Each structure stands twice: as C-alpha cells, then as structure tokens.
Length: 413
Image (tube, rainbow, N blue to C red; front, side, top):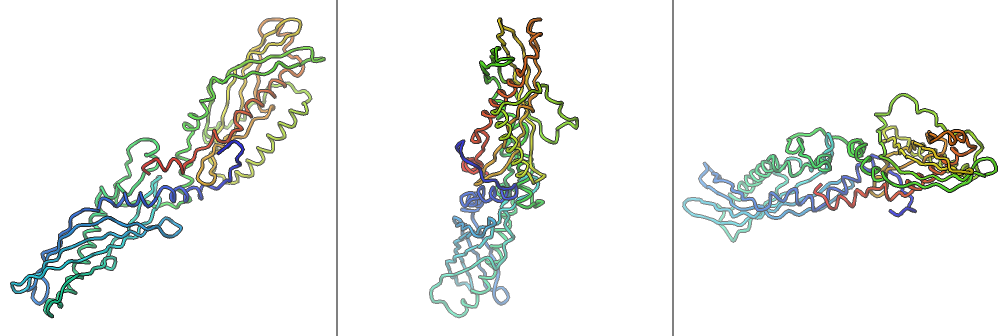
C-alpha cells in the first residue's frame, strides 16, 4: 500500500476465510498427499471362486496425485492413480492382467482449536475406488473371477489408503499450527487423530487475538525510539515577544493491550487552558473525525485494541531578553486497533492524538525560568506542535500494514 491508499475494511470472520483460502493452495494440497506417491501396494494372495480354488495376488504402486480445487469453501478433489499387476491362478494355469485403479478423495481445509488449519479427508470406501482390468480374450471360467477380484481389490485398496491416511506422519503433514509456525516453535497438536473443529469466523477472531499481540505491535513501534523532534522557533507570550525553540527525542514507546488497561481513568492533561488557534482547532477537528470514524468502524466488540504511549523528552528554550530553559516530559497517547482489510491485510489503525490529550509536565531550570513558567500559551503551543509531529509519524498507513497474502507465498503454511 502507498500512503494515499484508503483500505477497505473487512471483519475478522471474512479475514479467517480468506486466510484459509489463500494458505491452502493446490500445490500445498499436493505436498500434503505427496507422501502416498510411490508407495508400494500388495494385495493378497486371496482365494476366490467356488471353494477358493482360484487364487490371485495384485502388486503395484501409487502414482502422482492430481488436485482440482472446487467450491467456495476450500474443497479439493484429489485423484490417486494406482497401477496393479494381477496374477490369477486356476487349476494350475496362470492368467496375468493389468489393472488401473483410481482413488477419488475429497479434501476439505478446516480450522480447528486452537489455531490450526487441517486438511480433512473423509474415510475412503469401496465406492471411491474405480477398477478397470485389461485382458485379452479369456475363457468363461476366467470371466467369472473378474467381478469378485474387482470387488476385493476395491475393498483392500480403500483399507490400505485409510491406513496410510491414519498414519501419524501423514496426519502431521496435513496439519498446520499457524501460531507455532509464526512463533517458530514446535506444535503439540500436529499428528493428533482428532481435532475440535472451529468455524472460519472463530479462526479469524482467534488469529488476531493470538497473533496480533502487544509484543508484536511493540516490535513495530519501538522503531520510533530515538527519533528527534524539533519544534519552532515559534513566537509566544504577550505580543509574541518570546521566541520558543524545542528539541527532543522520542523514548521507548509503551504498548498495552486493552485487556491489560488499568481501571483507573487517565489523569487530566496538564496544559494551559488558553484560546486555541485556527490551525490547532482544524487539526483537532480532523482528529475528532478520525476518532468518530474509528468508533463507527469498531462496532465489533471483539476488536483487538491497544494503548500506545509515546514518551518524549524535550528541552525547551524561551528567549526573552535572555535564554530560559525548561525540561518537559511528554506522554503522547495513541489508540491502536488491529483491523483486517482487503485483500488479506492486517493494519494497525492509529487514531492520532489531539493537543488536549497530551500530558505535558514542564520543569524550569533556574529561578528566572521559573518566573516565566506560565508564559501565556507556551505549553499549549508546544502540545499542539508535538501532536502535529506525532500525527505525521502515524499518518503513513503503509508502515503499519502487513500483507499476509504476500507472506503466505513464502511460508510452509
């Protein structure tokens, strides 16, 4: 995204379904079932016919699967070919046949507790196994054996495939623990024979709750630490006779999840209550609209929100006949909300601060500076300027955007 792009918001539920659809591709399905390809298969020997007088044995191997995606809810049709050589013995005579078997699997990408994507495959039945034998002209006695051979092969192939699918290694290959993958940890859930299924909606909500954490947001915003802030020089005081210059540094930002927010109300900001300038009023009006828009967009009570506090240390110089110095510690609050946007984006939406939201505490250095500590409008103007600087810092949406779809292309999910 470029800074000028306006995101199109989607809810967490829609994000969950889009995530699964983007993560579970044909190539990943092929990889999940590729372990079956090349596996040898031997069926028999079995007795067939009257009194089991005829016997047959079939040997072959599983071929490369074909995958076709269908339906809106991440379903796949998978065909597994098996080539078999069937040797039939009757009355001391041997008949050799070539058989082509096709196994039809229906795969469904499902989501499970706590944050799993599982390629679910229903048990294979004889009806899912097609069987075609190639034989030259044979006698009627042999023809009577073909149908029972076909039924037995279909049943046995279904049982063998079900055994392969139930193997823990096969199940691990079809189970993706999204949280463990992103955290770089081992998953305790892969290889389990059963899962507790959850909906795509629930998966989307859990994704934001478990993946978009305060620690991850903190890693992003901590890059602001050390950034310089310069304000002024600007005029203040009666007759605008004082020149004010401010230099400062952003210290390590603090991020708190909404669930960790203390019950105590935030203290009232300590800034002068003086008339506002036209520019300041316009800036705050824009911030108010941003806040209102965020509240309208945040109708979902399950939205993942954070409180970002940006501490700034300022050195303030006020020149009135001589230089007077002050130290200011500023606490700049920014409301953060993790939102989902088209096509598959996570955006840490930021509500910029208003001047009246900024907690400004000034300490004079020296008695002369202390006498000027209530210089008309100085605190207000500094707060306005700091708010403007922070608004510029958080205005670029691209710096707070994660393209999940692009990242999926480079992962093993």
